[in-house]
Length: 309
Image 1 (tube, helix red, strand yellow):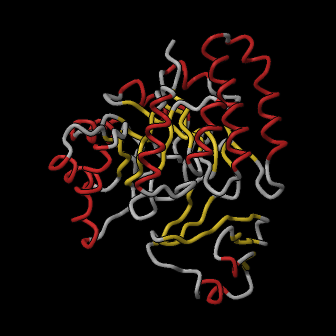
Image 2 (cartoon, helix red, strand yellow):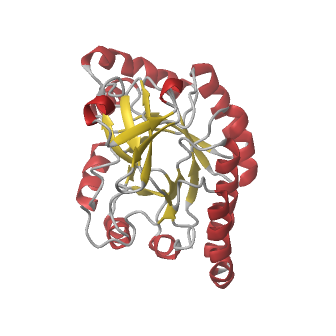
């Protein structure tokens, strides 16, 4: 039985060393100018250092170029892709076809992973981008387990699934925090607004708290809960899903390391000793629950929902 890759989002190069020790197989890194919702900012020197560190330990590095690009950035894409190829990046994650076109012109041998975070909902779409040149498709977070398994069974490309962390619910290219909440009146309020980061949108009517932040790519509002599927890996492993992603955005260094270590144990046991996995998976879930921020309960996302609204 194939063991899926454990893919993690590190905060910096030093953090990568801890995550390698915790059992990560691969990393998604990048810089804000080209990548969306990164756990940490990596400039070019740090990308080169990260790739050298990963390769020395038998790990992989994928660089995020999944932003939505306007005309003023299009001419930069080929040069950035050439740099990534020169430092031996294992793949580039993209959503905008502009990256695909630039790669065909400048770096035709560079591996591409297609990811839009929203439209990877069926195997026809995944295979379409595979035939255009992508080696992997990242599935949307809003599809259920049955759809994931069916997609993998019919996919011509590798399939990546997020198994843990926050999910982006809303993104705008505009910086909305300057006036949006005044317009909303007293129904909602923000903590930590003066800090410009780690802000939380309160929906008092529903009792939810949504992490919210702004970067070069605009405003992002995240889910009120953290997805966690550590105790439900069997179907996806049996189906041969290629990569399980832990998204560490807005989490602490220690939290990401601890969660990575727990998923490493879960994946290894689920593949190598299914009976033991069944015995310990509830304990692994409880260990993560004990590390959760009080306002961020765990849930299973859309994995077991019949209908997506």
